Image (cartoon, rainbow, N blue to C red):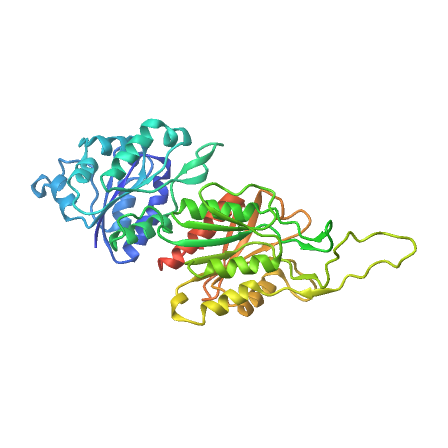
Amino acid sequence: MRIVLGVGGGIAAYKVASLLRLFTEAGHHVTVIPTEASTRFVGTATWEALSGNPVSNSVFDDVHQVNHVRLGHEADLVVVAPATADLLSKAAAGQAGDLLTNTLLMASGPVLFAPAMHTEMWQHAATRANVETLRSRGVAVLEPASGRLTGSDSGPGRLPEPEDIFAAAMALMHGDTDIALPLAGRTVTISAGGTREPLDPVRFLGNRSSGKQGVALAVAARNAGATVRLLAAHMEVPAPPGVETVSVETALQLREAALAAAADSDVVIMSAAVADFRPAEISGTKIKKRDDTADPVISLVRNPDILQELVELRNQGPEREDQLIVGFAAETGDEQGGVLAYAQAKLQRKGCDLLVVNHVGADKVFGQDTNAVVILSRSGSEPQEAAGTKTEVAAAVIRRIGCELNHVPHRA
């Protein structure tokens, strides 16, 4: 496949080197066209070395080959990353002031823009209008990622990760003209929060889960183009807009909702903290504390293993054989073994495709705004670490899921 890779003049240009590597390692012939401004961030020598092809941004180089016409005509795909506010504006207006904008006008195949800019630029009415104009012409424009930007600011405007852009480009080339993100057209079910098992009308057995990580996953999946169902147990944060929310309280209720939702889901992510046990009996009245009676003894019974049941159902028939199931493991080490040892054993026991592992404690993970996880794979690939805000961790998990679904090698 012949790909033209346009590089805009933003600091995120350095990340495009990894995207170029993904294209070339997949066997594609790539011609890089950097804008003049982008060469202040990454020089032409880098693009020539990584692509194996000469690089120019002038319509006056190799005039006899009429590059400003030929490159667009011959390209099976044009990808622009980072697509700055300036580039989006020029493309929407149909300007042709350099080799890249000429190539965009001449492109007869699919075109994909991966924006990157400051949040205010992305949210400006002019930029939004330019994006809508391009999309109305059949051009695919990704939503930028959210996170740390240049300086101390944070918000939407980060360049999507190279793996995400690659996956979107491959989907676009395979005929999915509506592709904007790697989970477009997918249905994703996510459980979040902590279940509560009632003892009486007042009391319950619960856990410290706030639901923040599950909500962040729902937002990341939604932003990746998926249709998202959120199975919400007790959460300290509201469910995000743009997702279908099913409220549950107990592990048994979550099991019922998960089995129903999984029936037509491409991905199931079980990130909720599910109680392993529930009271054998629930008192119909508040259990009283009395001096003339013995202290109550609470007997517990085991809750069903929802994750393992989902895997067993998936494995029973061909209609779900492509379903991806992701588990979460909140682990603590002890004298018997470490966190990852317990997690590896759990992964083998459950049979899910990916297991996201975090080391929990009184001041770790639960209720916090940051997280650090290790993603384990049943396929035996190298463990992948992700750390930062829960938004950033969620983006890493969803990115890995996109790689798995689109058969893109992940980079640990």
